[in-house]
Image 1: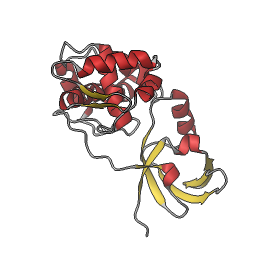
Image 2: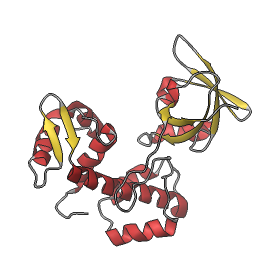
Image 3: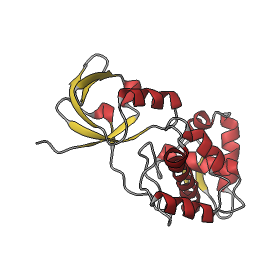
Image 4: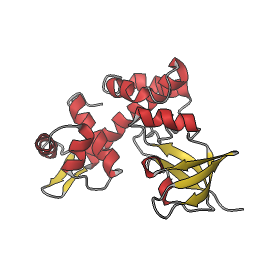
Length: 225
């Protein structure tokens, strides 16, 4: 990773990528809320990133910000570090999936490319992290990961959980207690037309899930029959 990119810059690029899913324009307000900083501070930073050589973002006043090719590669590199570290912490050091996000945030800026290579090799070059998020490849390509939010599904559909939002450790603890983790199969049984709660069947048990949960679980629909 380039030594000219500070941890703060890396964090900005990572979150712009995450919020924009790689290519959508991200508003400075969205970025300020994610980073928990003042909107004016965000504006100042994205202007700095836009004037860097090479430019790391494209910033349009009142429209938002998106990554340039250089910014995207830098974002994918730190995301790769982060997700490999999360996987390593869970598999080898006994961390729970709700404990690794902040640890990985601290470590992702410090590891060398050699350390990254050795972690990936020790893990067997995993495709996804403990939360089901795809891990960028060594050449900084984001694997395709078709999935859709659970709340968009309707009764009768069968799905498998592919990934979950990793930013809230309390949510992760709750999902683990319900057995809602990547790789688990669900059957959509009922949707309330009043509050859009979903009733799902997981094995032999049924769960009623509100949108605070169903908007943060991402699934792949299975073919019927």
